[in-house]
Length: 299
Image (spheres, helix red, strand yellow):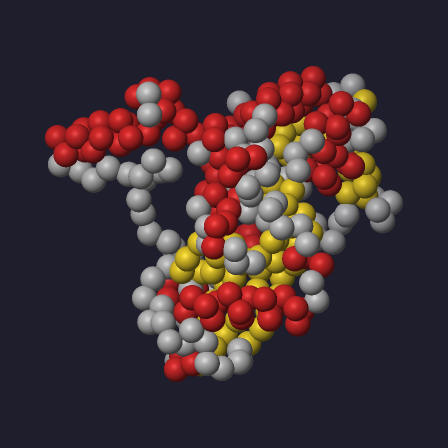
């Protein structure tokens, strides 16, 4: 689960930062086993279902056109307030005013700034503002990840694909981290008679796969998928997405980095962060953090 969600190596990651509910349960009850028994009893008394140690149960949801629908809707609703293809170069501050310079030479001044970029981009932007802040941003590492989408004829797959997909334990010695059966989860993800796999390869335990050629990448994924679901034919669709710095790693000590980062940000004043490198990597986590930032700015 850890490898699949975080693309990380379990014994390198911080339980407190990755799975805070587990840490709270362990602190309160002494062990996860005792916590699960206690919560199950409490839920039974209230005639409710108890969640898993990592969080409550629920359903996977998306949009008909995929998550890019969110971006399209933002563009539609706020097109007068969004400037695209404006690459920020650096941020400086004088008195209580920030100045942002862009690569095309444009300059804007503002009172508040929200940095919602990857941490390594944020570090470049604040380098002139604070070397300590830049260094703290750069101390959050990333793992490489490649996401390969393959489409097959349904008749070419032996497995019924009646589920979410699978994650791969390290002991299985496969290259892939896991595969999501996208067409089994969401509607309109594949034409009739076709199925789609979205497979992840790489992560903190594998920094070499990102350097494989497209053919080598697909061959490795086909081999591992075949061993699990049984594949008789060749893919009708191949889409490859590579991210050399794809998934932030909440390694042991991440909470200390965040304490330092928040301290450095407070020294600047009116400088805020939002994104998946800080308090959670999921879209839900980012939305929660964005609401908190908005509340801070409007106070």
